[in-house]
Image (cartoon, rainbow, N blue to C red):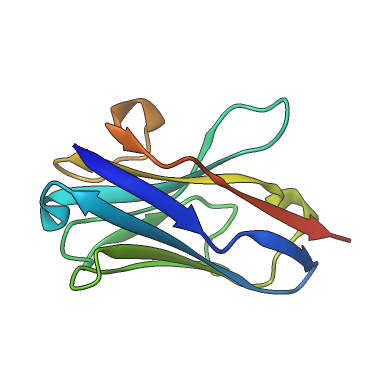
Length: 123
């Protein structure tokens, strides 16, 4: 099993920045691809970013490309999402997820999930 705990959400004005963290424990962290997803009220969960086990390969949704940066520190068993130039449409609950094998954008392919952290961007 892998346990994931997100932190770092909050309220920020449009144009501001936040950094989300996802602390992992349990099974070998280095063997899992990880990702960030988000879900706004009344909407489906959507892919934000993913990173492979080494951190050498990343992938982003078009809506966040150039503004968000995903990274991981395997020594600390932690993944991050640096969010810059935030927009009101970025408002959502953000979830981190982990899976065995290669990274993917499909949320149904992830085995482990955190409880989520709220990000609210005011205009």
